[in-house]
Image 1 (cartoon, rainbow, N blue to C red):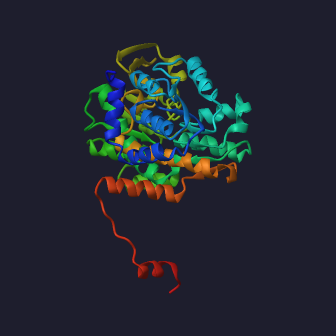
Image 2 (image 1 turned 180 degrees about the vertical axis):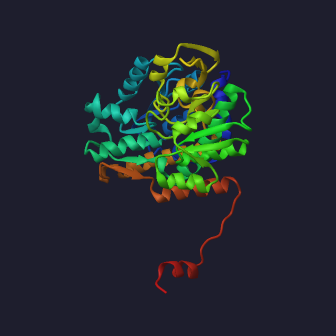
Image 3 (image 1 turned 135 degrees about the horizontal axis):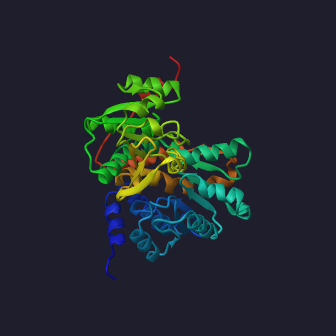
Length: 406
């Protein structure tokens, strides 16, 4: 059978996923997921498709949907279907279709959920409670999803353990900072074709994602401004050499805005009228709530598409502002998401965390766990090996010095 563009995209990604290659080799041989139903909700592109396929190679019955209506790549979805994975996703879904596809994935009666943003976990706790008795546990990929899962746990409503893959060191130190940092600017530059050097860039939030976006903006020659609500992170941004100010002040000076908080109403009707003519708004948070699009739609005098993934809004003061990718996750709505090698680390954590849940889930409490240290270490060691990097090992004398009183 002739290979399609989706097949070739998956192959290209896999060439640059050395840790997942090692996991695939072992999963094929050992079949540790045999007889297990796995429901996946992730951004469905080539790297994600490889994760789903490798889990199926490990013996699982896998069904997948897209965690964002604008991030599914239809050619990859088709290629994954031909590899035996159940796929319920398409680019540009309506909200109704989005939830229909989530329910179709849930229909496999999952034992494990691999989630991105928390919508699948939320669904089974609200509309599909009959499925809870089958579920051993779940993994969560994003900061937004972990926040939602912890809220469920704090309210005493979480019904199974969740491993916060987002909190794994091989995830947040690399994926959130280097992955989002690079891919956010990939999406903005591809879509706008403008120069970043010399621009005033406003980054909302200085968590790991915000740090990565700000670092790359600085490297591209921008003047970087940070908005924050956390005084410690604000001090960190200041010490890193950035200007820190409230959004109402930043709105007046910014040329490009990137929201990275995971919270709602970061840029809304309090700020739209303050923006400069020509300001560009992009969101790097999981959900399209950081830039309040409903409010913008209401106040705009006129709206038109000026380029693919760029909507121009004319405000009552006759200034034009531009929103990228409908205010959705810009690195996936307007580009290909994180670099392959970064997602190799994240999806290795996902794969091994799924295996860990199957082995230990029934003994775990119904709360949110960090990635087990041994999994983080294993993934890091495999990546170092793949890059021919050797490191020192502690001698017995050094270990004794660190562990015994002296």
